[in-house]
Amino acid sequence: MDFHASNYSRGRGGRPLSRLKALMKAEGTNVCWICGQPIDLGLPPNHVMAWTLDHYVPLSLGGDPLDPANAREAHRRCNSARGNGPPPNHVRTTREW
Ligand SMILES: [Zn+2]
Image (cartoon, rainbow, N blue to C red; front, side):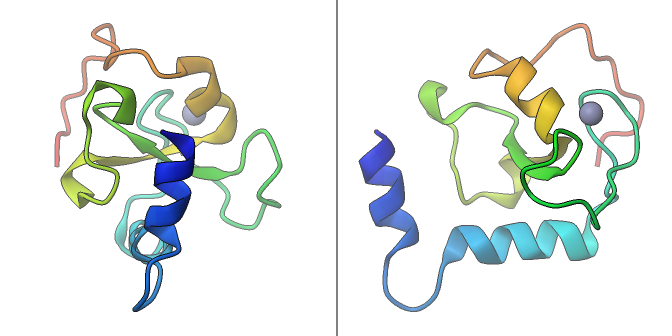
């Protein structure tokens, strides 16, 4: 699965995943959908609170990696704490978008 994903992002005509990330950063709320706290875009990418692209339906469960409707902004820490589990049902958000 992993090498399939890296082939995907190496396709010709640009990098769709990178473009999706740039779009999310530029046009998203920059708020973590898991913990609800703002994400500082100025942090280095390896920082635990850095911005990451999370997928609402994990790729392991058939989620589309390039569908903006499946993409969520999350802290690196929150994203990795969540892992590849199903969408957390304890998060009850009133501001779906
Ligand atoms: Zn968070």
